[in-house]
Image (cartoon, rainbow, N blue to C red):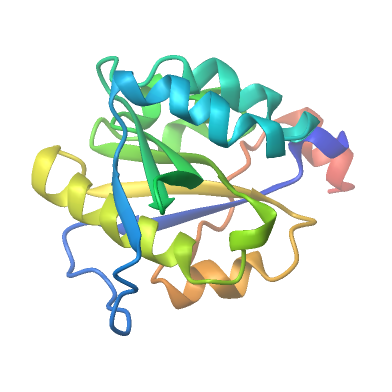
Length: 185
């Protein structure tokens, strides 16, 4: 299997109450981006983005299109973070991965790529944004489950998302001859 497709897939049940966090930092504004925010995203975040985020730019350009959302975090009128959200996992980039499509439901949402500028990392921004996303999905969509993926080489990702209530989806790769061959089974 190529390095590109080495993912761990997660899910969270949106019919249960979301996790809670300690008192929030009032200096960080978290909100759903609007079309008018695209220029600000380009100005504030693109300079920090590397080649790994090139894929994201295609979807950031679609902010506010039906089912494509972006949650942003801002401090002192400067954007420091984004997290893409697709109301329908079936109509998201998830379908371009080796995720077993038989596991998808019409009621699944997909939490796509996220990015935090280096100086803002480690400040509890992602958990706060994820909490806002979960509340949005619970209150403004028909989603009953949210899916996300991380690259297998992302240190600490499993523990991080487990602490937020996400569970690893076992056997998320389709059972094809090729996958069995590549896994040596």
